[in-house]
Amino acid sequence: MSQVKGASRVYGRDWETFLIPYEQAVEELKVKLRSLRSELKRKEEYTPIEFVTGRVKKVSSIIEKAKFLNIPLEEVEKVPDIAGLRIMCQFVEDMHRVAEHLRNRKDMVVVEERDYVTNRKPSGYRSYHFIVSYPVQTADGELELLAEIQIRTLAMNFWATIEHSLNYKYRGNIPEKVRQRLVAAAEASFHLDNEMSGIREEILEAQILFETKSNTVEDILRNLEKLIVSGHVEMAAEFHQRFHDTQSEDIGKLQRLAEEIKDKLNQLHDGTS
Ligand code: 0O2
Ligand code: 0O2
Image 1 (cartoon, rainbow, N blue to C red):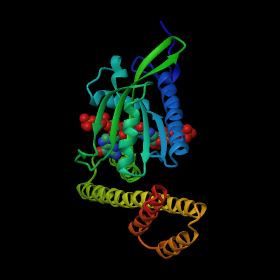
Image 2: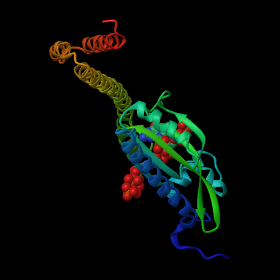
Image 3: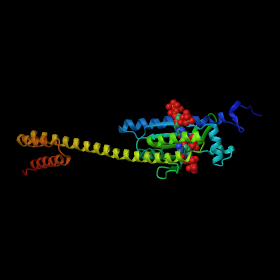
Image 4: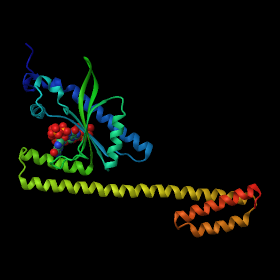
C-alpha cells in the first residue's frame, strides 16, 4: 500500500502531487501572458493588457466544484479551472484584442469560450472566459491539462472581487438587499466601461488627427523647399505666409493648402504655369 502523505492525502488522492503540473501550468502561463503584454507595449506603444494574475484552486474548492459539476473525484481533472489565469484590461475593446491573441496561439487549444460580457450573469457578473487545453512537460512526459483564462476590464474585476468576497462571507446566501445593491453596482460598472470606451475613441481620434496634421505639415514644408530650390522664392514666401496664418486652424484648411502647393509644383514641373 502506498504511503499516506500527511494531510495532503484527502479522499484517496495525493493532492500535493496531483497539483504539481497545475502549479507549473499557472507559472508558465503567467510568464507567457506577461511577455505578451510587454511585447505589445514595445511594438505598439500601447498594450491591451493591464496586468495578469494566476492561481491554483484550493483543494477544498476543487472538491466543492467537482461536486457542483457532478464530476466524480476519480475524474477531477475534468474540473476546468483548477489552473486559473486572469487578464485585466483597461477597455472592453482591449478584451476582444486579447481574446483574438489567445485564439491564435499555438501553445494552447481553446476548448470553450464563455461570453459573460454580452450575456451578463443574473448576479451581474461580467467577464470573458476561455477554457484551454495546455500541455505541460513533466518528469513522466507530457500532460495535457485544462486551464481557465478569464479576461476582464478593471471595472469588471473590481465588481467581481468584491462580490466574490461577499459570497464567501455569506456562503452563497447573500441577503436580498445586498444582492440588489450588487446588481445595481454591476450596472454602474457597465456604465463606467461604456463611458471609458467613449473616452478611448476620443483619444484614438485625437491620435489619428495629430498624425494627419503632422504628415500634412511635413508635406507642405517639403514642397515649399522644392519651390525655393527651383527658384520660385517669392511664391514660396507667399505660401509660407499663408501656412503660417493657417497653422493653428482646422486640418481641412491645412490639407487644402497642401494640395494647392502640390498642384502648383506639378504645373511648374509640366511647364503649364
Ligand atoms: P485568494 O483565495 O483569492 O485570496 P506573482 O508573484 O505576481 O507572480 P502571485 O503572488 O502568485 O504572482 O499572485 P498573482 O498571480 O498576482 O495573484 C494571485 C491572486 O489572484 C489570487 O490570490 C487570486 O485572488 C487572484 N486570481 C488570479 N487569477 C485567478 C483566477 O483565475 N481565478 C481566481 N478565482 N482568482 C484568481 P490568492 O491569494 O492566491 O487566493
Ligand atoms: P474561484 O476560483 O473561487 O473563483 P455556470 O455558468 O453556472 O454554468 P460556473 O462554474 O458558475 O458555471 O461558471 P464558469 O464559467 O465556469 O466560471 C467560473 C468562475 O467564474 C468562478 O470560479 C468565478 O471565478 C467566476 N464567476 C462566475 N460567476 C461569478 C459570479 O457571479 N460572481 C463572481 N464574483 N465570479 C463569478 P469559482 O468556481 O467561483 O471559483
